[in-house]
Image (tube, rainbow, N blue to C red; front, side, top):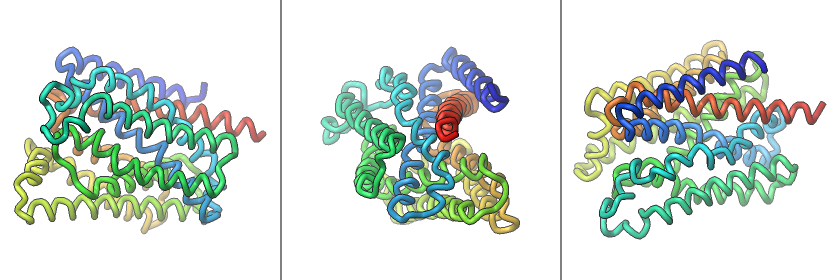
Length: 330
């Protein structure tokens, strides 16, 4: 076992211990911490698939150069079934609408456990099927085009289900594009962080995706707040208030500040690994802010613990798939 995998195992164990300690004092808060980590890593498999589909349709050389890394991240898609199981079993502890009478009357048919779980299964199964086709070498341009259409539809549903439905009845039209930027930025940041340190043309292309993802995240979040807040929309402003109280404005400020450092690290010296690490940190902080009103009484324990466990679990899956893929080409 390599040093990296040993470190990942230790990190996963520490994350589980943190979640267990949190659950002893606040079970619901610990479950929301688990959901936070799950949502965070669920960006990687579809994001890797999106980049691979773009590369296949455009015949981009970076798709070949970083193909092993992208395929390994996509291979983690089936594991989302396993990591999402605690949330599915304890759905009523996680989402207020899952309890009788918890959803608004006009949403009770849509926001009910059966349809919710069915939509989640379809999304993860679709990502897993695309990852299987990639592994089998059956990932032609036709499959890539259909895959992008599938992902566009999923982005209209899953972010609303997994994140926004924590406040039943609240939604926003740009959440799909917001999550698309996160999905593109996540694998791009991981590739730059763990990839070759020397600048290459393909690395520059991946850095471009990272800049686009971070810039899109900052822009769309700011515009959504600007429209809801200054548009004098009380029903929408309440969502922002819930995310700004109790000092949580510091989280979104920190996420945007770290995101700005990504531009600096790429614009002055092309420090790829630094940019990748900063971008992943910004996405993690943004994810904590996004779900922070639902983290329970111990947010500073369960939120990092949930992120650490799921990130380590994702790392173990990706490194295993990457090792097998490289061995198969030796």
